[in-house]
Image (cartoon, rainbow, N blue to C red; front, top):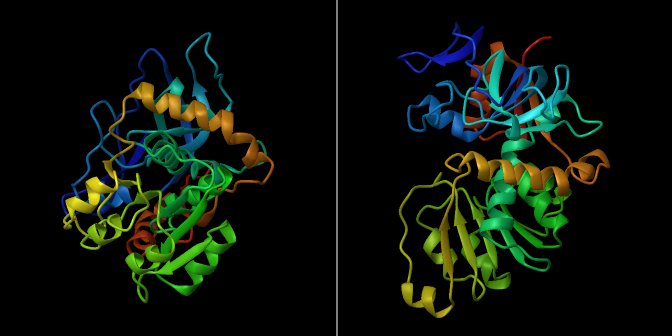
Length: 319
């Protein structure tokens, strides 16, 4: 079969590779679509390798059709599914533990389904499990127009929270308002810390971090929870610990990719139970910014690098 490898010059090369080696409870999926994540760019740069046991090539979420499945299990050949991966989605086929596979919500396309597992699992893990999100919480979502941002905003609104979010352009501001964001901060013309004076945050999902983090954390509501999942603006900041402990604040570091299979499976089961019917009913949406063929993976990566996307970028394989 073929997969998208990275050569020594960091070029993407559609290459012949060995077929997946199936473990006892693995499902073999013929990949129809794979959604991109910023983690793919890091992996391509050699900074974020696949966890042990997963293929070396990129791809954290796919949709497709089951080729083979363990006997007596939930899945059978021909089932339309999406799946959360540790890596390996940029390929014609992928082997996935059966408990990391989900049915495609009724009415969704393959491209839409590929955009669900990573973004919504990351949102649920951090907002609900790590952050203990409650109705009426004021929740900050950094980079609201990203694939993760569109998922997190919708999840927070479904929980009854008030949402602040940051964007980098007026068109992205319009996009996140349509998703339900209550307060939108253009980070190129406004300071997030200033906006937090009027809207103290109970819970933050932060993929930006950087020098401004300290000033923002200090303006949180008492007993606020600030969750850092990436450091796109840099890994260093200064925090006044007097404010930190007097308010009873919590600073939490979190990644989905490093979680155990059992933890990921529990998150996916919760998504199916709590959210899947909402997608079928149109209450939640998988928002795809653009769909390109696998041969245009370079162009797809460039969209992410330039931060042009409003929602997910998806690569497809013809079937």
